[in-house]
Structure formats: structure tokens, C-alpha cells
Length: 95
Length: 320
Ligand SMILES: Cc1ncc(C[n+]2csc(CCOP(=O)(O)OP(=O)(O)O)c2C)c(N)n1
Ligand code: SF4
Ligand code: SF4
Ligand SMILES: [Mg+2]
Image (cartoon, rainbow over all chains, first blue to last red; front, top):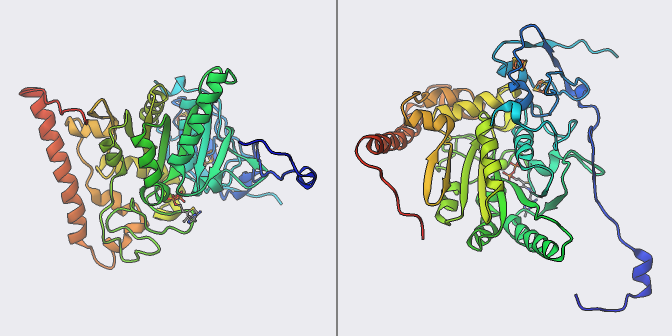
């Protein structure tokens, strides 16, 4: 870029940025979107990790724990679990 | 690579603005795991612009540029030139992976010129098209990737035209690596990304991304629909390098005769966007046309496979 002298007002104005920072819960606790809740029966789970990789929200940990703060209740984990260890149940919401 | 060997670290963070069952987030997770932290991401206007969430917090834990619709290839060219300079100066020890992430609208229709230019220059980057077969973000309008007979908000009786095939257009560019992937086959997808990461030059990966609100199926069925697409032959899994195409995962099994093609009718029935093919009465003609095309492709591939096995090893000349 060619060198040039900055005008005074340019220095005063500075710049505005729309830089976001990465973070969990970027639109809040998305668990509140849920109507059906996935419930895991640990006895039936064979730790195949399919639910872990298929959950679009990264809401299942690699040791198969579901994060209900963010789980949106899409039902993919229950649909894909080959051992039927996860079932979707209607969630009773506490006010 | 087995699932248990996939890295645990999540670079796509929970609590994003994505719809329930979003195929875009599912694809981002696997891609980010394979590519790792040393990646600079350029997102082209699409659902991914939205699902990363509004300012000031982002679900994408990678340096990200949100860029205009037509600019995927051009942005990558700038980024990769800048990264090369920073490596030469010693600011970067190693060159990060430059990743462009665009929808089918941003690839098939609006971004193809910039993508083609970058590919012709063999720009050093990975271009991903996550193909949800419509302009989903703006309300499911048709794109060049929308399949024949599918409903969209502006093809209300089903699209009249057949989709084009940008992966094959990229093969025709002679770039070092082209692959297709499916959400239902995460180890296949992971392997393709990990391989692409190690190659220099233009790499193109296209992921089919079944979209629950756009294709009108329940959010729990995203992976199931993706799997049926491969099983029915509506989506094919392959990779192309050094002038040679290798079919992979479910597609390979069908070609080698280990599994049978699923009748396409079952795939179509699973989605509301094809409902007009079944009600008020069954549209045998259009369903038959779709099945006919699939049969033709697979019969040819199965025949070539048998020839290769039993008679001779056919090697196609590498492009250019
Ligand atoms: C030049 C231009 N025209 C139109 C738009 C509006 N727009 C933003 S995203 C989008 C649809 C993108 O479709 P696709 O690339 O398939 O991504 P998807 O939303 O399906 O993920 C449109 C039309 C825009 N951002 N820029
Ligand atoms: S219901 Fe959906 S969001 Fe919730 S844990 Fe299962 S796959 Fe993840
Ligand atoms: S898919 Fe089912 S069996 Fe496999 S790890 Fe998840 S809960 Fe366990
Ligand atoms: Mg799209």
C-alpha cells in the first residue's frame, strides 16, 4: 500500500468491528427448544459412539452423556442408536 | 479410522442457531475434527452464515471470514497468497489449511465462476460444498443442485430439470482431489477430509446435506435420509485423484454386488418434497424416469467392475 499521511479526523474516528468471539450457547440455552427429550438407558448402551458423532449439536460427550442445556431434541440419537438405548420422551417443562 | 479414534475436541460449539437436526452442523463437526485447529475458514452466504449465530458470539471456534455469495474461490486465492507470505516471513511456522464452506446455491449457481478460476490456478485450498439441494436459508428456492421432480418454493409441481453435477465439473478441471461424502458415513467422510488436508492444490469435497425443513421430513431422519440417498443410488460416494475414480463405502458395496440398490421410491417417500409423486395418485412416469437413470448408471458401473475383475484392468487416461 502506498504510504500516506493520516488525516487528523481519521485517527479520531478509528474503526468499528463486527468480530464475534467463539463461545458455547451463542444463542442461549437451546435446550429450551426441546419438546421431546432423549433418555439414555446406560445398561443397553454398547458405546458404539454413533450417537456421539451423529448429534448435530455436539450435545453427547464421547463417554455418552447428554448435555440437556443445549440438546435441541431433534431425535437423531434415538433414531440412529442400534441398541435402542436412547428413547425420546415428551418432556415435562418446569416453569 | 474408527469412530473411537476421532478427536474429542469440538470446534463447532453447542448452542448454535442451527435448526433441529441440521445437516450443516453435523457436517461441520466431522470436517473440523478431521482438519483440526490450524484452519482458516471462509463461510459463503448460506445457512452456515446464520447457524454460526448472530454477533457477538459465534459457534465456529476457528478464525472465520464471512464472505459474499460469489466469492469462495476468490477469497481462497487471497487467503492462501497471504498465508504463503506469512510462512515466508516466518510469522506462521506452517501454512494453515484454507477452507471455504459454501452451500449448493453458492457453488452450483453463484460461485462457480470464482471456484472454476481458483481450480484452474490450482489454488491451494479445500472447497466444501454442503449440498442441501436448494437455497435453504432464504426459504427453499430451487438451485442447480435440486434434483428432478423435487418440490421447492418455486418449483411447486416438482422441478422440470435434472440437477447438474459440480463434483464432475471439478473432476474435469483436473484438480488433485475431488470427493463426495455423506453424513451417514462419518468414517468415510473423515478419511476424505484427512486425506484432502495432506494434499496441495485445489481440493473439492461435496457433502450431501438432507435438510429437515427444506426437504420436509422429521428432524430425527437427517441421517436416515442421507443413508437412503446412498443406498438408492441418488447420491454416490467416490473420490477422484490422479485421473482415477474410486467408489467408496455404500456406493462401492452396491457396485461390487455386496448390497442391492434400494428402490428409489423408498427414498422419495421418506421426504415431503416428493409427496406430489405419490398423492393424490402415484406418478409412475416420473418415478420411473428417476429409477431408470439410476439403473443405467449402476448397471454400467457394475459391468465395468466385473470387467476389471475378470477380464482386464481398465485404466482411464488421466486428464490433461
Ligand atoms: C448476491 C447475493 N444474492 C442473494 C443473497 C441472499 N442469500 C443469502 S444466502 C442465500 C441462499 C444460499 O443458498 P445455498 O448456497 O444453497 O446455501 P443454504 O442456505 O442452502 O445453506 C441467498 C439467496 C446474497 N447474500 N447475496
Ligand atoms: S436429541 Fe438431537 S440434539 Fe439432543 S442429544 Fe440427541 S441428537 Fe443431540
Ligand atoms: S448409539 Fe446407542 S449404543 Fe451407541 S453409544 Fe450411543 S447410546 Fe450407546
Ligand atoms: Mg443450499
